[in-house]
Amino acid sequence: MNNHILGALRLRYLDRGRQYREIRRAVTEDAVQRTQERHMNALLLHAYHNVPYYRHIFNEVGLVQDGVVDLSKFDRVPVLTKDAIRQFRKELTSRDYTTRRWYYNTSGGSTGEPVRFIQDRELLKWVRGTEHYYFKDMLGIAEPTARIVWLWGSERDIFENTVGTKTRLINWATTTMQLNSFKMAKEDLACYIGKINAYKPDIVRGYARSLFELCEYARGQNTRLYSPKIVVSSAETLRDDMRHVIESQFRTKVYDFYGSRETPCLAAECKNGSMHVFSVNHRLEVLDNHNCAVGAGEKGKIVVTTLHNYSMPLIRYEIGDTAVQSDGACSCGIALPILKKVSGRISDHFVTENGTLIHGEYFTRLFYFKDCITKFQVIQEDYRQIRVLVVLKNSLGELEKRDIERKIRLVMGECTVIWEVVDAIPVTSSGKYLFVKSLVRH
Image (cartoon, rainbow, N blue to C red; front, side, top):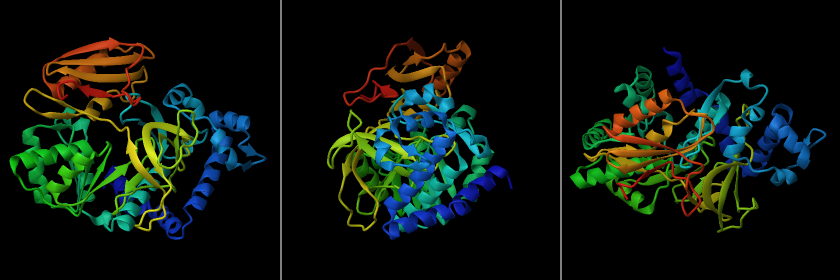
């Protein structure tokens, strides 16, 4: 069997067992904080000895003395920004990263500030262990053997006009069906509904907006969708009106799952509707603009320390989202901290003249690993006019520009692409960057 398929099977069935058991034990024994502190100490010592960026900072704030971590001084560590990652990427990379099964990743989400970073296989094991805990212990679903439909994005399928053999085989081997949400014309939506109804999944997962658009189409066509056991929404803010439409069309409950490429599996919604933070994976702080902790019920920016990515530790990393913190306990009995509300994850869809919806993250991914671009924003000004704002670190080559334009036209049809080099990208009233913005849809 292909090594990629074996790897996917190992991550789904085998490699997450130890991590799952540790999460479950910590929550069951009410030892979440103690377990988090143990992982914090190990990570901070590793960063002190192996990551030049942190050794300098930890010495300045006195976090590590004689080989011992003083967690009472942790809040003196400066907040890590995307700009700092771009500027100090080499210094932030662990000296021993080549001894791990590492890979590059890049930030997505709503900020329009692509950042390249390194992750490793150990982090993936914790991601899978956390998802297993979430589905099995919090929702009561046997996820490893469940039939799953993913309404997710695949730009490669659009570029090549096909589904790759590797993807098909992995989907078959893991009882998963992936439906491409990056391009959803009416005929695509009708096809997806047919596939979902025929496959009869236990779980439907997808971008919040894509699930909503699919259900809106089903409602408009008076078409009945198969009702899975649960629907899990992620990647974007799940508004109350979106939740209502999705739940009414699938006739089951929608659960919100929160994370990012840099900090996966941050939090997820329980059966009682509380957003529980997976504190065995991360230390999550909610801070004000002066980087001081906010009180319960107050809104602040989310700052995260990833506890299991030793190849490139992200310590007190500002991910670009905001939340309201809670100090209460949930009646579900799960001993994990709660966020009252997560906001700031902003995405959008473009729409073609014939009504086809193009998910905003399709355009985001066109700028992945473009180190010459500091920030970007793609604006649909009209059906046939797209404006691309870029803040450049270095010049963008003509071949790269033409390639991006070609891929935009693959989904938008014949259109004019206007490039505009700017010094800054305007922010919203809440201080967020929109990576895509459709003036047609608004």
